[in-house]
Image (cartoon, rainbow, N blue to C red; front, side):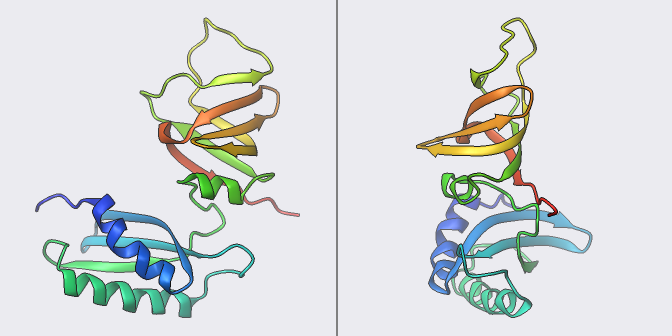
Length: 171
């Protein structure tokens, strides 16, 4: 099976999702128990509530038709469209900006340059930090500023983030 170019697939699918008034959060091409699966995660625009089952059905129909016409995926596959859930992935600057003032968990790639502490304790001889859990304070260009309780404030480069999720807070 030839590899799937997720960037090209995103360029194909994102305008269709945006055109229906949703935001494309994530695309994942993975091997499931019964074959290949394309997982499309969507969200409503800020202030428009949560994604419903009907929203997923509408986007699924549109994306399925688009994929059939362009025939970009090899062989048989299943299409899954879902909401991001309470632990919403944060991928782009606009995702982080949407959650300024909210808690998040971030893991940097192993090859990431050491993010630097803007304030707080700094131990130059310590092992580089990869995991951060704290409050998103700001987004400036390709960087996210996070306040990590007990550790200070850190500036993280978005391209160096391996995984990031919003953290749901029970009130």
